[in-house]
Length: 131
Image (cartoon, rainbow, N blue to C red):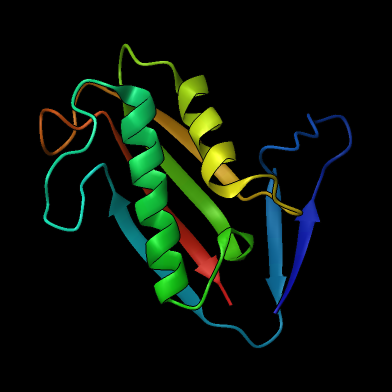
């Protein structure tokens, strides 16, 4: 698999996300469903704390990626849903703590919502990876 970052002239060139990514070659795609702040027993981690929930959701994402034979480097699309009233910069700080810097960061869509499937969830993250 080859990944190429698409960076149009005149658009922001952020080290945190890509405007677009082209994937070519023989590859497979992994679709990762929404990950939130639960442990292996299904218990909520960090009730009321957006930073802790962000770190747990991203740690869960990392675990699923590893199980699929991937790393964050394989992720081409990340969607982050967070509950209104929380600071998405805290989620970005958690991303850096869990994953560090990425050579070609994924495309990212961040969506502010009024609530998630479980009222105490403050963040949910899904992803598409290629390998």
